[in-house]
Image 1 (tube, rainbow, N blue to C red):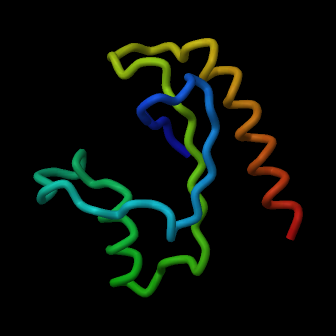
Image 2 (cartoon, rainbow, N blue to C red):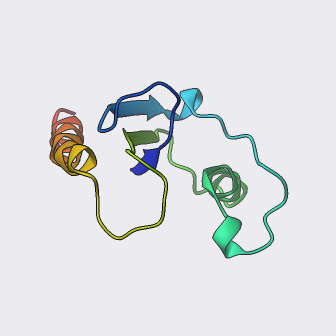
Length: 93
C-alpha cells in the first residue's frame, strides 16, 4: 500500500495492481537502504526463494508530493476505502 503520483489523476483515486502490472524497472543502482524499492524487494525475495506466488499493490493518488506530516482530505478519505477493499479481498478466498 502506498501513495502514487500519476498524471491527470484525481487526488484520492484508488488503484489495485497485481504484480504483473507493476513496473519493476530499477532507476539506477541503490546507494543505500533508503533507495531500496519494490523492484529490489521482489528481486531479493526471488533470490531467497521467499517470493509469494501472488502480490497485490494498492495505491492512492496523492494530492501533492511536498513534504509534510498530514494527509490531504482526499487521501485520508481513500484510506478507509483501501482498508475495506483489502479486508474484502483477504476474506473472499
